[in-house]
Length: 287
Image (cartoon, rainbow, N blue to C red; front, side, top):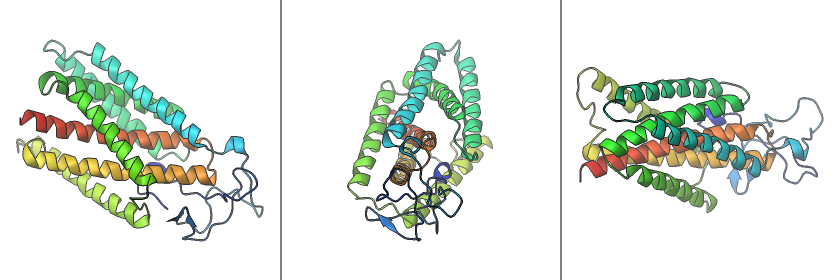
């Protein structure tokens, strides 16, 4: 299945699970199924080595679930570490608020640029991915500290727990096959996410050019509904991420692709955290 998430655009691969060695590839017909779900929408396996032979990737060169877990834990650990450090070292009191905000905005821009560079690279770069995680953590730390200090004390812990709950619920729904992750699902999620992002851009433009509260997505019932839509979209992308990781592990994608999985999962979890934080902040401030 081809993912709508560009981070996973190269994870649509296939390995013969009945092959004698880990990583032995086969040519897959379009629409073949593994585990009851369609595989990649490719006529041939994009990871198969060039040439007439079947191509065998040894076990040490094929990605495993442990590889994905370790890389993801490392990347998320970098986010958490820099978030905690920025919370402690970049105070958001009146005397330091401007400096802390400036650093946070700069870190967010650097993280965004690094994520774009990695997104368009043909192979994952651990340095870029960990750099993105570190700068993203700085931004999240200052933002979370500001929200906790000035708007809703305790909301950050609630947002973290909410993010874990969404991720766990999505994983359970995916493993139980309550969510059917196929090409139609991916297309729907991609279209919905495009509309969501366009609304965010429109809201920012209205706010920047004197419309005050923009389109109203920052407060009240409309803000909560918009945030809930963002959470649902994040969960849908997380289901796509799970599917791509499962396919890659089952079909023996190159081991280095574990870093790409860690990058995509981190992007999605950050999205979910921000939307959960938005909803809880609006809800707590209105009560």
